Image 1: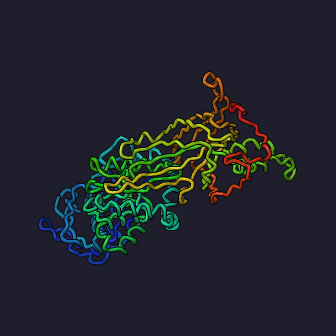
Image 2: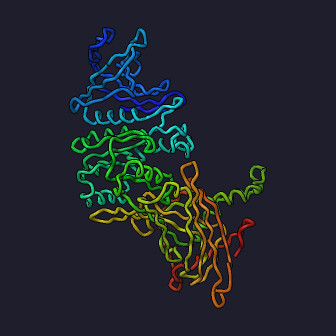
Length: 529
């Protein structure tokens, strides 16, 4: 088992070993002569500005062998045995220098590789005022991840993905998992005898796919407690596991012993960008990937189109009716109606919808993961321009995404589009509190702007406008405009299956459903139709 702790006290990382035996010293008589042949704990820690490796009989024992990681050398004697040699100070004077060493016996090759990776990682780290900084950087006391993400959000995020039930939810998305498997196995030529890094490995399933495809070695990097489950799963598949090393830590902080030929990851969230893991994927590219290396996936594409859904609009608006009560146990709730109404419309809707609700051809916006900079993901602006196919009320903007696995043999897309087999991402809709009225052929313009925030998500700013239509429209300007602000972190998980919208024989597709008009107190900056 490996444990990492990071707080105001010290960072720690622990490994359970089969045994440790101290070597006899040839240069001093003060060396220890006892042998620790029972199972022991190896603990890396940062204290007093020094990275130290201690070998204890158990996690609570004070009887230990200590070495300075900076001056130590770790060499393999065999698949399950290594020797660690370092300089140490004499216990009596604190001045006398002598060489100390221990032989380390591992329980299996997986633990041997993980221990050697951790040793190299700690050796390369600098310690400033008790905080470990990777790659010798001393400009900040926090890693890049910690600098841009609030601790409470990160804690909840890693706790969520550290649970098997959530991993199962993703693995049982057979569209997702099956597409990844097909993309890897159909492109074995990209994996055979190559070094692979699995970014945010989770259960380790993608690492096992890469090993099945013939990867030379796979480094599975996972920051949550799921790393322990990944080790168990990989150890239970020894024919593949001998070529997989699980490393617990963030890709922004860990060190790897070699560069990768391929990165594989599942960094997509709702609307592709939610959870901000795409940034970690790009950082891993810059830190670990060889020039012209492969990325699975390589491209993300966000699709958008205006939609008309009277049922959804009424459903959201009706949620606020609770606050129209004048005598709720003698209390008038109406002063909060406006705020509640706006609050419900600030939630993007996550569900699967019928593609016949779309009222214009889609447009798309590409994110090339092989080229994009991390900073480009902090704020994403997408200009919108559509031509309405039918006359109707436009209730908002529908969005979904695809990703491309650009293999050397087969190019394969994973899509979350409406009408395609449903995934656990579903689709997302931004609903306007003030719908727009459009005619067939009328131009709809606007902007979708997404700004990252420190809760690992985005604030969405949407504006849609209907331009003048008909003779003389080229001299005209905007006829109607409607805007909304939504928090991608707090969606409304409607997640119903696409509804069958019954039509009368004389009713045309996309014709608005006649429901009672809802009287809306629009914001000052929203112009009514």
